[in-house]
Amino acid sequence: MKIDIEKKIQRTLDNPFEIEDIEVVPNLNDSRLCFENKGLRFEATVIYLEIRDTVLILNRNTPVMLEKIRMSYFYIIIEIVHRLGGIVRRAHEDGFYIFFQGTTQDSLNCAVKAAMKIKYMLTNEYSKVKKMLAIYDALNFAMGIDDGKILCVRAGDENIQHGDLIWSGDVLTIATTIAKKLLIPEHIGVSELVHYNLKDSIKYRKGKKEMQEIWHSDSFTHNSEKQTYFHTSFFWTVS
Image 1 (tube, helix red, strand yellow):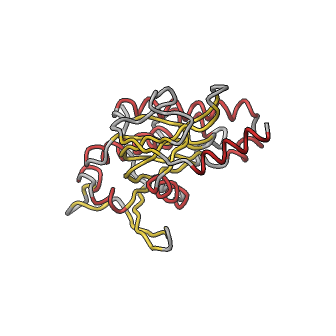
Image 2 (cartoon, rainbow, N blue to C red; image 1 turned 90 degrees about the vertical axis):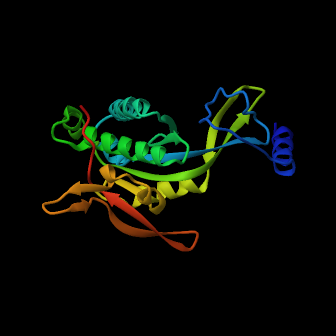
């Protein structure tokens, strides 16, 4: 086994890497993905959603209840995102990548609208979901949004047909960084480019005399450079 592992790692590091540009979000069964040095690259607007305080939830409840909470989040996300044309992929136990294929103004606005609808279901007093999850301290979450190119590779061992998809790209790093900067009740944050391309219906609300911006700016450091992002506490009603 030791020799097999060493050969595999040496082959991975030495061989060239092939990248194929595609126009869909890949899944584990995509025949173009293999266990060698090949990846699929696509453009998308991505929401990174993280469930916070899972250790606290686990300490106050049970492992089974924590899994039920994760399943509840997953179901809420799937139902809302699918209707808006997005695709959900698991990042890890407490995080999700939500992809809207493309980096057009429409894909950006669909992503932000989806995030606002998810926020409504989890935080609004008129949502029974909010009341149900609040009992288990399960309402601390955040969503960061950016757009750009994403590389997907299949990692594992083809001989035993065991593996998973690994996602990488600057867009994922930025979306994750924004999410981790957010504090309640500011559950949604977007990059500067996403904010610039928001439609007025998602960017402003009616004030007494004029339209008012619902987003507030802040900054973070990425690759030693200061970048601006915007956050909001607003939601989009789910009927």
